[in-house]
Length: 194
Image (cartoon, rainbow, N blue to C red):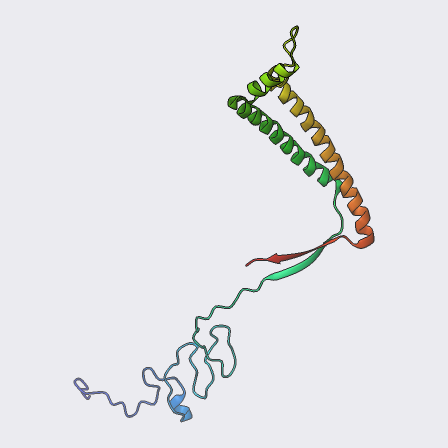
């Protein structure tokens, strides 16, 4: 029985691949190539794997140069073929109500500003002197142009404006639909910003 303790093993008879060596490189007799990084070109000029969406022979990743491309603006040419009279009536009704409220508020603010400046008293005194006589004091402008009377008159005008604007807008939608059937309607070019 032979004692083998303390003896160094011999690697001369080992025929397998060395550590880090690919299996089959010694049997085929080909040169040894270390493992390639993913995406790096393999021997022969071919890229190993896919990187950046590039595949096939000669596909090499190139560094970005930092040049920014100009965004393209898409344009579309559309034609308004028909306007729905019901939707036009609803929108015009709401817009005319808003315009009527703005008219009443503007009239009230204007009356208060003119009254604070003393316009009604000055002009009213001049008119009463011009139209007055010994028996009467003349025309009283301040009582005629009082704030409640002005607001009532402005509200009547606003209601008439609401009715007229709604009716005219709806009638305009019908007329547009008739004319669009003959000439094709209004053409619009729309552009999309990116």
